[in-house]
Image (cartoon, rainbow, N blue to C red; front, side, top):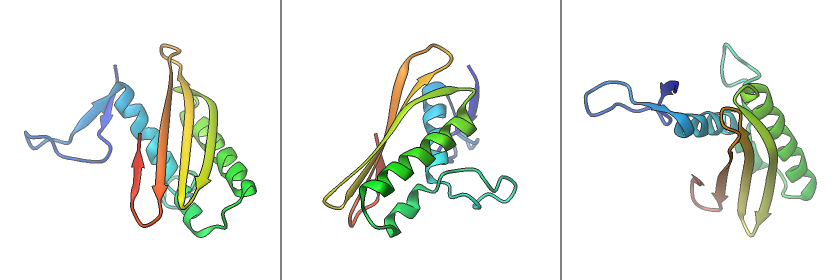
Length: 127
């Protein structure tokens, strides 16, 4: 099993950089892609999909479809060696935007999903 720096970044009780592995590491990578805007990383300017820009866009079905497509493309590009993207669903309802990315892990062919929810007047949450 490989390990990587924990996400979000943290320090363990012993004063070392916190690490994660397995499903936690993979979920962290997916969240990083979702929340990183293209152009935000200097050395990798096309990394990410810019999910946070949704907050400033008009809410309609076309935006939901375009966002789902860009998320699916970004996940496939940056994590294509680790996952198969099964589908991305973007929905909005009364000030809440929900993004769910379903995927199959290439290591054991198990299916998982990451859900991110933005609620009006509050921060985002993952599930």
